[in-house]
Image (tube, rainbow, N blue to C red; front, side, top):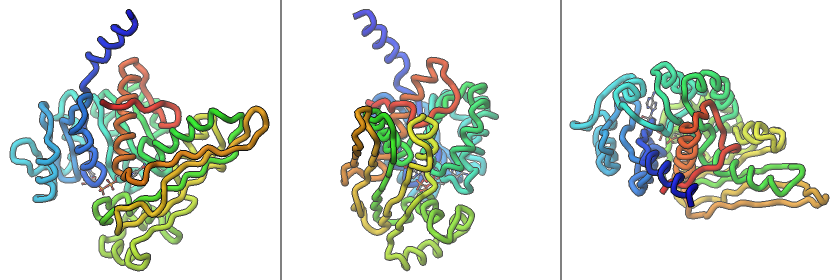
Length: 341
Ligand code: NAD
């Protein structure tokens, strides 16, 4: 009984968390809608490329969407908005006591997220950060900042989207049945009605196609993306992607990275998934049996639901670590997400 009341007291003093969203495109906007239904998190600040919006009493998702649609940036909000060429730095400096941020930013160029993280360190900000990074090489840059983040008093949760993220965490749970893991195979299906609702996601996916890389995809104009999608009938088929699920599962001591593969199909003209997203974990049990666990996402869960739900689950889990003085970098394969009420 005593333990229970202590837990309740602690919980009440921690929540609601004041949270920010950096990047207000496809995922950032979906994240703001998701937070509208949560009591444990209060959304107080958001930034896009041209400005930011802040209200210590909480922001309204509908209003922010409207401003963005009408004027192209949150910074145009006449009451709470500020236009800025350095919107991230100014938002961090002016938003005051924010407990955690979801970094829903494009990682274009491939060094962008690490440069944003350095801005938090330089600002002397403390709290919890969560990203939905995809590339192994991008996550390696974040991991290289572990000591700096620890010294700065920041708890950083990396790879906390859908893949990497939800599916990597599921693989980590599934691995427990086995004495030895032979293979982890992630296959995703994504359906979106229009590619331009998720420009960075689509550009970063194109970067995995044969003949493309991050620099080339980053440099593509919108017209060039449309022309490419015209050639493929709106479909991107991706195989053996450079995805950080491999690094995360290796770091967690589950399987070597060469045994992890990620691929999928993205339909940019249809919100229905072209195939069911799943992760298959194959291994040998301690009795010597070879078997496979499969975890399949519901077809009606969107990419936004799977990425943003997971990101905030890790923001909450990371906040608990932060409050216990555990700073530095953690991945979605080594910590359980905490459900946000
Ligand atoms: P988007 O292109 O729709 O939106 C990007 C937003 O970032 C825009 O609001 C833009 O104004 C803002 N932005 C760009 N540069 C900025 C800057 N310098 N300062 C401040 N804001 C800036 O992006 P999206 O499709 O929502 O994708 C966001 C990220 O999420 C991508 O990196 C993508 O790869 C990642 N993602 C991860 C997963 C996963 O499962 N792990 C799934 C989908 C997307």
